[in-house]
Every structure is written in C-alpha cells, then in structure tokens.
Length: 147
Image (cartoon, rainbow, N blue to C red; front, side, top):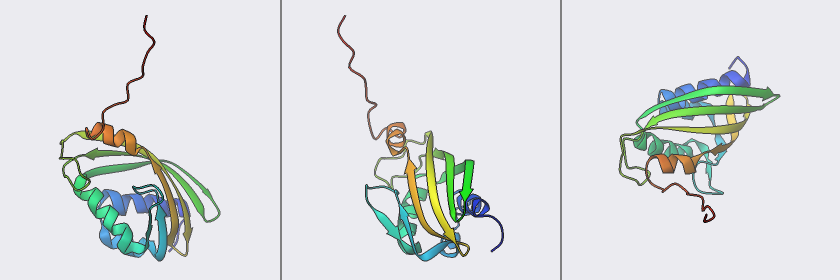
C-alpha cells in the first residue's frame, strides 16, 4: 500500500467509520492488531473479529455518523489523530434507548502502522460527554458555597 501513515489513518476513519465498511476492518487491521480504549477501562480488542464487535454495537447505536479528522501528526510508523464526530443516536445497542439527538464527541487516536495495516491503536475519547448527550448520565453540577 502506498502513501503515508497519516493518509492510512484518514482512510481508516473514512472507510471504517464514515462509510461503515466492515471489509475495511479486515483489510486495514492486522490479524493480531490490538485496539485499546474502545469502552471499558483496560479492555483490548485483538484482531478484526474482536474490534468488529465494538464497531457493530457503535454503528447500531449511531447509524448516522460523520467523523472528521482535524489534525494528524506522523513520526515514523506512529501516527496521532485528533478527531471530531457528529452522531445521531438512533439505536439502543450500547444500552440507552435512542434519543434521536445529534451529538458531538471528540477524541484522539494514537496508532502504530506497519506494512499497510494498523498494528496497535490507543484511543482516548470523551465517552463521559457522549453519555451525557444521549441522556445516559446527568451532568455534574458543581457545588457552590452558600452566600
């Protein structure tokens, strides 16, 4: 595969998330590729089949998705991506009943790309804000001192 690792990550977000192509996962994630930070703390999806389980649930919960890669920094075989997603909460695959609301979530992905495939990925995204926007979590209200 030709092109930079930054281009690879742009394709990943477009093919896997925006276009929802399951076959792109098989082609782009190494057979033993590891993906961290998808949901539960310390959970790691190894290989396309495990990653696809999370991806399927996420796509069912948010059938309308648009991920925008806002920044990419590449150094050797490592790539950092800052992204923003606009999602419509249209399914209950992640638990909460669909609100049909448009939500916005941001995140950062750090990836190791080699031989045209994602070898390992670390994700950090604002899942707390996502939960708040789909009304799965009440906002935290600061306690102010009494006057």
